[in-house]
Image (cartoon, rainbow, N blue to C red; front, side, top):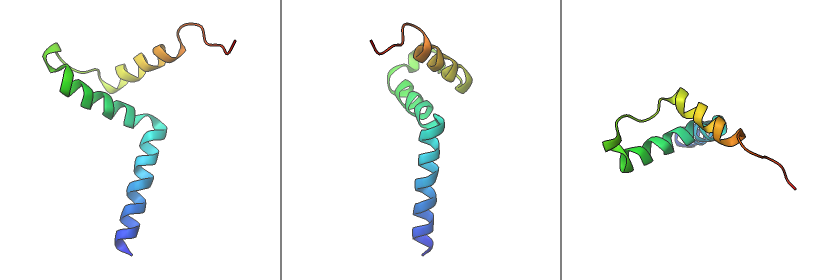
Length: 64
């Protein structure tokens, strides 16, 4: 019973992270550590989300 509760809580926590964008920041940090460590420091969480917002909303966004 305890294991099932733990596993359900873990699933809910991971789901919450994917919904609020935290998983994207964690993937960015993992990628940065593997590929870009010689380039200084990674973006802060705030700077990362600002850059992602700009990337998503800049440019033409339309279906046709």
